Length: 611
Image 1 (cartoon, rainbow, N blue to C red):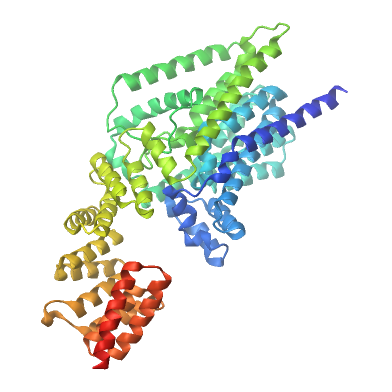
Image 2 (image 1 turned 180 degrees about the horizontal axis):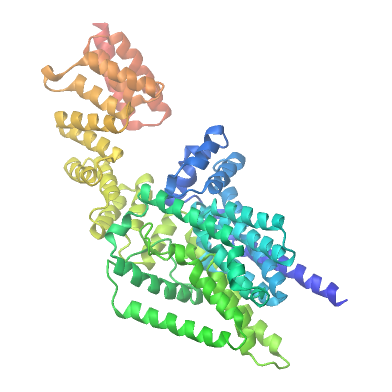
């Protein structure tokens, strides 16, 4: 009878965890794709969003796109696109299903190892509901978090089975699942270390084996970790993902490590003012901050060592789980522009949750209403986390809510000003976009993309001199910045600096052969140059035809140039025919400005043809 009741309780826990996750993350159904990295991973990545092909499969295993080698993550996104297209709801649901799976597997693993279902359930509840984990679930670009964690949990479960009945086949399964996890996200390199911690508690394998034997048993796993770490470092260094290292002194990065460890703990206790990106606060930290952080970490570590000697081994496992699993992302080797990130706590937080789940019951003395008191303590915490998670999810609804919230809770956040500016520009709010580009540049004057996009925004407003200034600065900072160089050429052409414009167009073509807009720009100048001696309409026709062929005669701007080139050589029949096609395409694209221009030109060509 007791076994039957226990099974019912376990089933109830599983169902409660699923239900809690579904209700807490219900706002996900309203959330859109986010331009910040979702475009790179899914929406604008043709190797992913076109579904499965031989090319996409080969690409997934060979690319270093996004500064990582994680083929399973790419295949996961590709499968989503194959099944659902670019429907954000379906992509979000897959992330949520992975998060729920991770939660259930975590509960299962802890319950199996400890035979303590209620403590295990509390850890799983904290894991599924904590708002720090919203970023990993709500951000599609972080599919690698929830996917790799699935293999983390499966590896631990396979390891538990192996420890119960060791065999080469069961150990081979552990290695396979771990390798798959590394192919989803290399942050899993710390898993062999965590398995050693689990050997200590709760598996108690150190009582039956020597440390050397247990470490030797995991040498194949450590070898995989070393290989993955090497590949990741080389890929990130080659792709420039570690470029921030040059701007951040080693002393700052070391200090930031200690500050980050303490900050993550603070955010787990009081998860307020969470943001998609926390910028570095200059290149130095006030001395008191890292000093206080170091003292806190030392004090906690010493306390845990002392308490562990009093037969509370879960403290050491939980604390070292937290400290160790954060090592790959703690910032010694800086990747990206963030000082820390909520998503980095997805797996490390489990260590602290273990300390809470096993520690609080031990603190309370045993008395009649002990269970009631534990429920009274646990429920308000879980309800508060539940509400915070729903609130945090609302910020992830779209670009504007996410970036505006990040700017409201952080300071000097150039990346978020830049990202919000891009979203505003695409939405047609050019003046607001210009303001945020300028604010980004006040914080980070050498932000090449901010200069380039600000220049483009100014160009669209007709502020040509200002546009040329920012676009020139953008290509000085990054000579291979193709869009900025093209827009600079276009701006110079509009300013009447035709020779400089042609020079820039040719540099664009050096960056990308047969770039249609650049071919079109040169053609336009060659058939409209105010200096008759510098005109070459026949060459203009060749370039315009080539550009039109590259765009399958579907670009009205290029066809307008071709019509002008035909007219400049007296071929008005061809000019009229080409302009009519350009007019049809401009009408389909609802380009009012171009429509008016082409109608005017078409009438001129018809008049000349009639003569």
